Image (tube, rainbow, N blue to C red; front, side):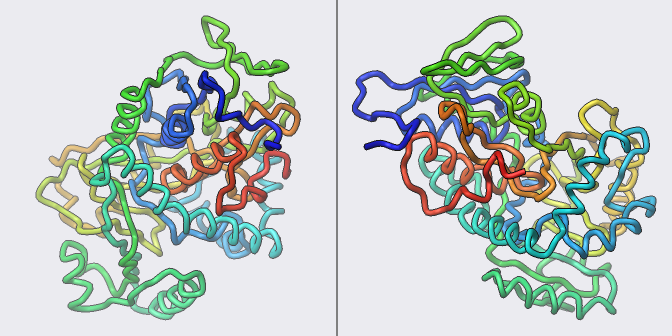
Length: 425
């Protein structure tokens, strides 16, 4: 007997699946559904890859096993908020809207919740690079994944014990690091060495060559295999007895299954099918610096400044800031100024005002416990979800796709989806 909602693979006609959301999670999910024999339609109001997937650092941050809400984070929150160049922003005009979410966020810092979240994030992150390798091998694009290593740096010599403590913590989770100083640090990253005291080197870390280019490659493979892309906004989901109808801006489309991968816009769609999830749009900022003669060898994370610089094909990507400001507020110029400030402190050659720089702001889908939703609707098994990966959307995209499609087909997977239930709140 097949699990409820699973598909009979002996059917002569492929089942139809809509994937709503054409970011990196949606693109990976659409391809994974194709691999399982489904006829897939990808739907998004924007061009594929132009949401949060466009603006990330391109780094697969598998070492980030801590949820965003921990006792340590809460203790540091006030100082991060009041620091004019700090990594946290809570716009006063949005405070009344964010308060219920903040209460849940604080509640998620309970030790048992944090411990549960760490184990779930570690499970996903450990499986993420192998899943990406499977995905990219299948479409002949393995060159897009680079075993670059990663440097977490400190400027202050009195923070050496912090690095040693973090190295020991990483070892507990099976993450290999090397404490580097002096000539070894200069060898790894000559552009930065004079500004730094020490660093942790993560030799097994990966990045992608260029996030947006990766999305275009995923889309090209999807279309070449018979996939369809419809550029329309989705207004409503209508579960039927044996399928699901999707109301776009101009038409009503019918499918056997649907998977919602709409990132920060997923909340409203779920509300229409009776599910309330505390999803917040966390606004992230980036700079892309066209500095062809300034080349980093690795993605660089600043432990003290809490931002990341990464060498991409498009230039030097500078990513940081957590702004809980929803989907409607305009970008705040001060956030870009802070990224300029931090990047120039670590890389003095960026002080040249003639270097071309582009600015971007996008929306990360974040839940209070920092875990994504990877699940099916509790009442309508033909409707599934993969969204809410916060800062780890690129990292977890391929494994999220494998998991949600395995739920749809009723097949087994080594990873456990229980922590990612849609009704856990």
